[in-house]
Image 1 (cartoon, one colour):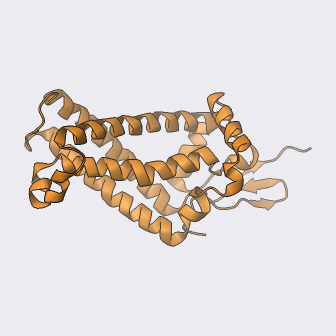
Image 2 (cartoon, rainbow, N blue to C red; image 1 turned 90 degrees about the vertical axis):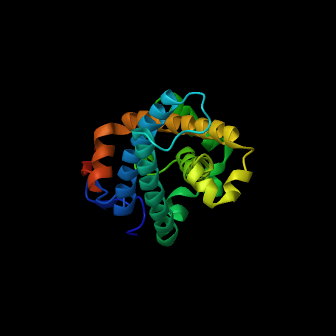
Length: 222
């Protein structure tokens, strides 16, 4: 399926190849998320350092401009990814775990392998395990919507036009605290994600996310 994140490997003799492990939508939105994420983190740090204890942050300032620009890139890319994911069946086929994957022993095995930094083998090399599926779903449908909501709550220009944002989350300080907490969770997710990519094979994973292809590999004789 063109919209799927991974294609089933084709077996021919001793070769096992997966010519399109990632769809174009997944690859493009992934790198847009990456660029916007760095923009959001760096500009967020600049805003925090410039206004560590001030609730009403002025609109002027390069940090604010970069933060808003990065946020809009992230939001638009995210909307396209989510719509495409539902239409193509990407979420259903590649991220939604079935009941067998949610078995306690399987979750424990995957968690144990992650903690021991074991490299995936066999069918796990180019498929999402249960922890990845649950984590990605949580990031896409919980963390990102919440961090966008709290970000809008802190914007005076948004709350003046849409007063509903000013009456939720217990005020601007609460929104700011939640926003900061969620941002730290996303940074933690990024660090773990990067570590797992390195464990699984940094060069192969990055190549696949750029080109949409992985090199054919020959299986050893049994």
